[in-house]
Length: 310
Image (cartoon, rainbow, N blue to C red):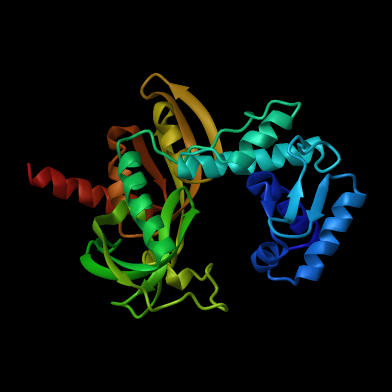
């Protein structure tokens, strides 16, 4: 943390607590009491009414009528901080006192950004419940157990020491130590069932040198290890959005004819994963595979097998 950030946090602590001793502030920041007094002098010279009183009941305080103004934060800085605090509100469901103070100081619209991590379906409420249990387990350093449904179609009971909750790639994950795999793992919250905080204290801390972006830690990494296929698809215009919601469309050409009506020719890269053909089948008659030929042939064989079971 920079010295400026320390001074900013010191002002907010005093605005919230009204008064704190130099020893309390030194312990909070991990510095000496002498450093705290030096910060107080710096703030006073900057025109911020911070003062120190000696004797019994003394300490470091700030004028009760003081509010942060533009001498501390620019308007753009206030907007950036408020946006970050609004995102935090979306997670906790409660607005912090810091957000309320900064909103009252901002001259521009502080509600320009809304962050909502929920989904439009009832799944969002379930993930919120899982999120809250995991958050409490992380903060209290306790172990959790749950049934996990992997991409390979297996369901296994996992015992995990959770370290952090991660939002990545439009989904929530919990990152922690998996006892079954004896390694760090990511688990997708939507695939977790029967989650329980067993109340047992975790004995595994997150290593300081651990690369949390390491792909091997994701339990579903196998689907990203597949080669990418370049597909050319003829898709009903009413279904194009489904592909664009999940993949980057490299090229799209809108067409129409009397037979098929409005449609698009789409070029897209997708993983050659086990679920690819199930995904293509979900479009029904709204899609036609043009290239590559081996994908078209395999798709046709699957359709014939399905027809043979009718």
